Length: 213
Image (cartoon, rainbow, N blue to C red; front, side, top):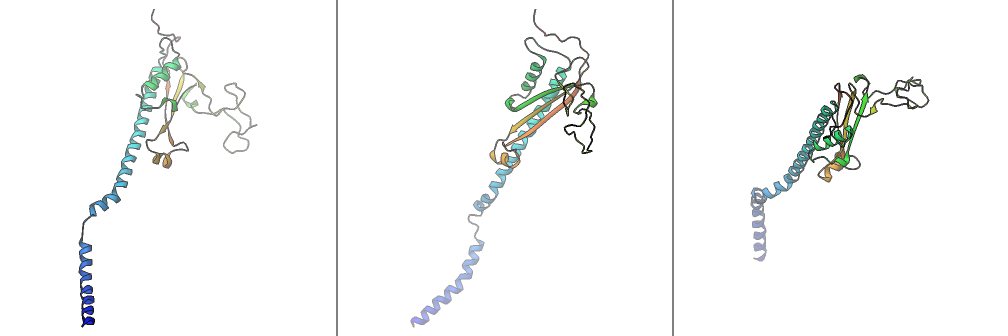
């Protein structure tokens, strides 16, 4: 009798197992929490990426706008009392970034050229080994008279009346999060942004400071 009872219990358990398994498969308790656990990290990563790229784009727009404003002022030869032209132009660039740019990570340069075709041009040289670049010892035309080869013949400054001037800004932008700094930043976790423009100075006389009498 005991043997029959045990066999019956085992048979009942075997019959109930498929039903419980089906019930378990149909159960939807905790599905929302599980989906959130999978989706939330991706959503956060995408949101951070959008914010980071938005910051980089906004910084680029600010730099381009600042350098255009500075070049339009610089081409007139205008300068205010108590500052050199270079100081005034550099301060103007910094003001036009509205505090969103870390000026300590910004490099501002102005180079003077005789013509637009000379911008970023190196001195003429004889490429004796035909490797497409200047090597020590190769003869060259010392156009700026400094006794050494220069891969850019521009001279620092804002130039006088009618001069061609190239303005440029290099900015090492920092990311807001460490993740993107490691993924697409340099070894210091930054990305370099650049903005530049080339203008021809308007005809103007001797530059004099606009000082009150």
